[in-house]
Image (cartoon, rainbow, N blue to C red; front, top):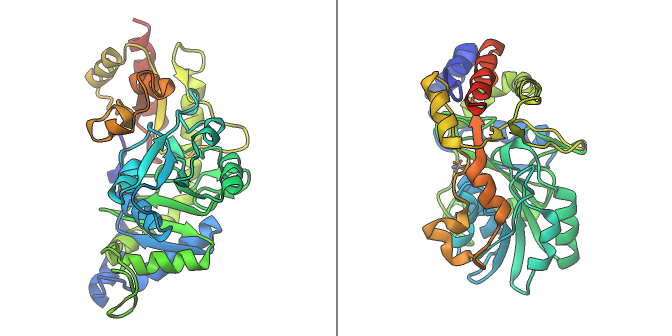
Length: 365
Ligand SMILES: *Cc1c(COP(=O)(O)O)cnc(C)c1O
């Protein structure tokens, strides 16, 4: 069993993917070819955001967004320590300071109620992560940000396609950033990412920063990066859009089925708030004696992954952003208990049942 079955997805889409890639090889515009604008148009329409700017990765999307906001050394950005390192990395790379706020124990998303107390004169932005495919409390976070004139950057690397109060992830705040890393809900065959916004000036800044700060060829109006997404990767995503709605439905169904199969077991499940859905970028549960459970599953041919074992404030590179000894207890506790099970649109119900049976057996020992 694969943790994310990219081979089955390729088999299902082989004709479309091969044809899309071949078209790029035929026209030869590998950088900023026509597929780039085509994909940006399709994704903007999908999310409802006015602008989509494709970039080299999800990390680059966060970095370019913070550059476009004009983040300066010493500026603070409020975010969660219970995330992949890229979230805080983008802040630190620009000389900014990540200010961590703990998560809600049942969703693992940033606790919106704790944010306002962390705002200072140096705060420039709030960067919630829509972890595991469920949007954070974006409206509460937007309201807090509005009271203090701050930008809100949604790290939607795991939640592309998720719904929140009838709106789409990536179009819920000042800016939304996603990733097309192969295992994300919408993936390419290498690195890729995108920035979404409805602010014309911000979109223009992102477009310029993506190509070394150029407003026209060899006119560098600002300092930028080489941050474009390859034409071939855009072609792959365009091909995958052909059945993306079906994949999203399938992921939601598999997530609900996992919940149903585990609900009467001793396994604690992630909560999904009633005003939003989860696209299960990861299907993650809370288990006790995790190491034993993980190796019991491994012995039965079932791969699992820990997203994430150590919150960022406990990592050497980010230890200076701790605030005290008993920092972020819910993040620490989640780090000890979370475990992600195989999920992708092509996972079949028989395999899914094998997973839940093995998990129930292993955790009742
Ligand atoms: C994957 C991920 C990123 C980074 O995306 P890349 O495309 O790998 O650079 C950032 N934040 C979160 C929450 C992610 O899961």
